[in-house]
Image (cartoon, rainbow, N blue to C red):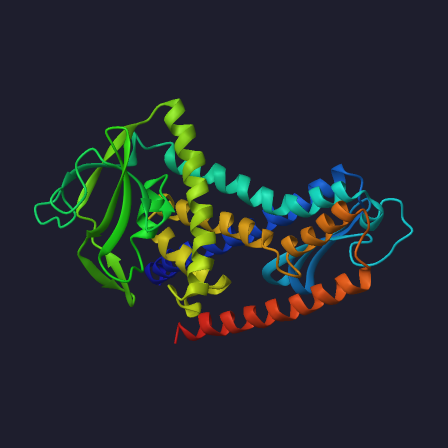
Length: 350
């Protein structure tokens, strides 16, 4: 009996840990809004983790803190956020720059947290992968005869700049064929290499480049650690942006989008093999959340920022009724998309 319970908990615990981390990422985002609002003199009426029926509630000096039944999400409800208010501490009565900072800080907190996690991930490593070719495998097709040479620093693949090994890895996935247009730094000069041939293999229905060379490592110092932390975080962010662009272009399938259920499951699988495998995923997800929320989509923070920017440029706010309609339509679209993704994620388990 005890052995069975131990096996059950060892199987379930990674998913519980993953679930807690996922909720924490949401809390980080909303806390960014909360701390900015409080700092800039805006009244926060409610701070909630989750949606739906309230499970726990605590009334503070001016804010009610709540934990709700459906844990995937949360909100920071400010006075005068979506309606007019005579309260001097209302969101709608504050200067545009203050409102801009309050709205943007949710995403900023996600990005800062992602940067910290990336740093924690890189700290134990003694060397960091570069994009400079060190040696080729015996069966390499991309070697000197066909383009690449030892010592080449890869700086561009198919028109996209390469700054880190993560950039390289992303651009080696979901390729049409094995021929890539590359640009390298060779002896201090930029050299264009058209149609460099690589062998490919199938992975989840996509063509993926089989890496046939190794890259040099960069020794860890304070300087290289800081540089790698920033560059890797930027690379994660670029992957998010390029993934959306590539999905629109048809390089990836819309069905590849994952919701909270699948994300938690993926984190749980990573947690089974140790926290070190889980941390890069957490960093990627939180940076993903930060950037996605900054997209100029109605109902998201980015959509709200567009209206504030219009006000700052033209010195006149967009009539609130029009803004509310735009955000309402955007919210319907997002909720519908979330419902479809949720059904897809759950269906995948059966």
